[in-house]
Length: 363
Image (tube, rainbow, N blue to C red):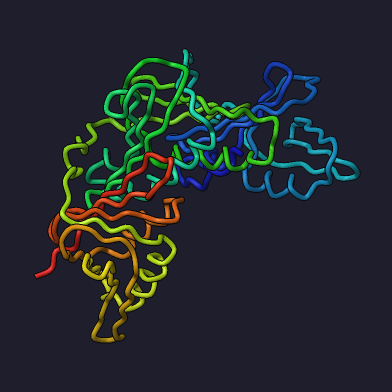
């Protein structure tokens, strides 16, 4: 649970370790990369209090080889002794005093979200986060509690300036309204933790988020994740989403995915373009691509097309990311003209999700 964020750090080798510390008759395991910290409480019997840090990967690899049953941890002068059955091993580590101080936050009433909704929502928006450090505010997921999302609803939004993903879902707990930008990795890590416990019937249905001015605490059962927040102002994206369209097409999601994958094989390198042509007269969407070096392909999809005949050129990766994140059997594409962004929606889905993608503007 905690070793996932630890890693090699030449300047601070202790960041590759997991801190073991007795606490309230249990054992707390903690790891950090200085931006995110994860700790997990494991029930056990404590005979003597102590703390020590050992290499996270080595400890994980070794523990996974032990037979099921009781494990004893004994702090010795030469390291941490691990006893299980007939096996006795000593792991060399570092004193707990060298481990970075982990933040301790006073948590008030937090925002409560269904764990399954939180996990899915993160997966639906995280791919649209920017990887460019030139605009740090776009490297996170904006979390709007209340406000633009609606009463007792939260909006998760992410954009890299070429596409925008937004998922809205209900929440309980705190009635405070607010907006924060959370590093995408922190929310991805929170979603991963929830996924790791998917078969554990003892885990709660809710995940709790507590915000301070510059930090977020995600609590799920006996696991706690602390992350810094991203400073800055997330773009006011609502006015960018069109509300009137000239063409609308409803298509089979599975058929569109296959057509886009086929077209991607013949898209121009570095441009990644696929071309969609909507024809209301025949109720078709033609997906095609061509490259001088590899050839060309064209797939005609039957669907419901209304409005005017229109064309759209998109980055196939962007289109596929959005369509793949939807669970509906059909998707709806709304368009104004070839130069304007297209809105992709899951047709008939109960999820409040929308995906806006900019076209490739060609001469």
